[in-house]
Length: 373
Image (cartoon, rainbow, N blue to C red):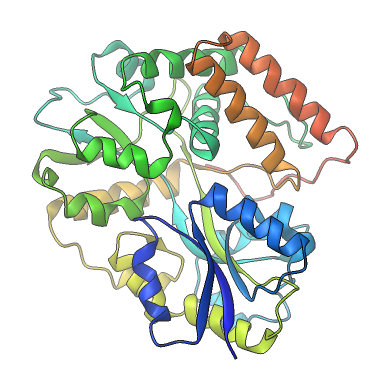
């Protein structure tokens, strides 16, 4: 009996997968998250057997038609060990569709040998000569746009889950992204998260934000002693960080349900979660996270900043089954603005129209009830 799994890949996530060594597991997909989502959708749509998949709380609603609801399958005692907020983010219409692996929020990393005064706000960053990098495509680009809009007091969706994207805050957000991109490397519109980390570590950037899992790569880099962590920049209204939970789900196509449940329990248990945390991730298992000991003062500082950001600045999207289509339309339009194909107003108008089209034939999903900051 071999379990077939699909995994998110990259330097921030791969250190966990040594837990599969010696296990009867076939890795069917191992890719960045956009590629993973597309490949999993293809496989599950075709009825291909998958037993456990990496997913994300914001994507699980779209995948729920292919997934087992987990409330009756996962041991409640195992869920009790995990951060309640992380578990709540994995629910959609009251049902648990995935079990959280980790919590992501962004930390600003700055080259202190190049930057004298670290900007505390987006306005200060824009007014400085600092070369700042950010993802130029897919979820990373749309997430940065989301942060800028919310930090300025705007919103992408109203309390009923309807898009309210076309606003002054959104136009200003796209304009700011274009100005920051204009002084960054020309390759930025093609960057995913891992590409941003690589550009920071090879000297092409003065500053960039990173997820907690980037710590292992940063710590091992040749410039580790020249990088310092700081709070993510604040907007004119508040400081926010686009956030969420990577998680584990069990597709309905599994042929080994009991064994899949056992694997999920193992992946969110203390041992695997402590291993994930040792690589830099903010694991969902509360005791495993408490067991982490900082390796140095920089690590201690970045853990403190991360905890403060989760407590005070974490924002998440409302749970929408159609969110992936809205995200795709959003990042594509913003990227067109980065490339000079459309202005900020035109990009925002495109996102609004596409979001309205996507949701036109569906009743809005109820907004998430927990606070977002």
